[in-house]
Amino acid sequence: MAMTNPATAEETAQQAQYIHDLKAAAEGVSPLWEDYLRARARLDDLFAALGRTSDGRWRSAVLNLVAAQNGARRAAERWEERAAQIAAVHGTYVYSGLSRAEAYERAEVIAAGWVVGCACAYQRPAGRDTRLVVKVTEVITVQRDHPQQAAALVGDSDPV
Image 1: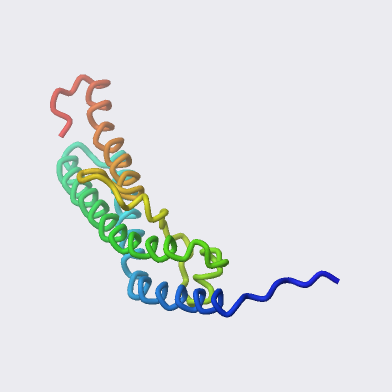
Image 2: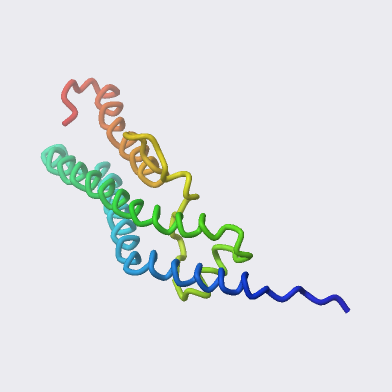
């Protein structure tokens, strides 16, 4: 009968420290993730609404969209600041014998859907964005290009 090797005392201590550090890094981050999800949903909703906006309300709708774009980017930046701390913990304990999922479970951290890259993803040159911020920026770029493309199709020199 095959037996699994029980964790050594050193591995057990390392895993306990991992759980402790993960709890500390993840404390209070759920509201940041929820803020990002709300900001992103608002961004998507306002962009979708542009297609249903009458010409007389177009400028107002675009102003609301720009505010939502800025809000989504700020929410992504706030999330990424804390995600970097969580990623650093994961990086420190990469050889602990625990997967991220196991560590979250043992730490009683509900991390469903969270975007947390590897620690190296957050050690970036100045001016270079992280994964979630890049994703939001790409969405914003598409949204900003859309009115220009639509205006060109209908011959409008001032889409906004």
